[in-house]
Length: 134
Image 1 (cartoon, rainbow, N blue to C red):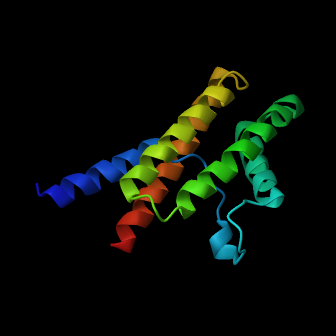
Image 2: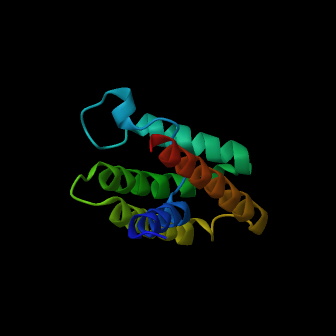
């Protein structure tokens, strides 16, 4: 394999391992100038997760601050033009792992298993998006 192909595979793996659940649209596609996700996006993400995992009202209340904390971190990484793709993937993975650590105690084992499956599906979609751009 060429160096480029190895780097590309490493990048895709880093992103696949790291990409947390993301809203269907990011701020850039909505035409907003700032890099901060808005409250509506976070609430929409919470509702999507709540429906998929059948969260209790108490669980939703516990998840909201975690999602509010995660969203601007993800947006900042994605919009940071000084980072290369591999660096972005690594940082996204770190944010995702930190979120997982906070979410796991809130969810039942069954819910956490579904959470992981949802994240895996999002990662696969992200990888397909990246492959289509090339």
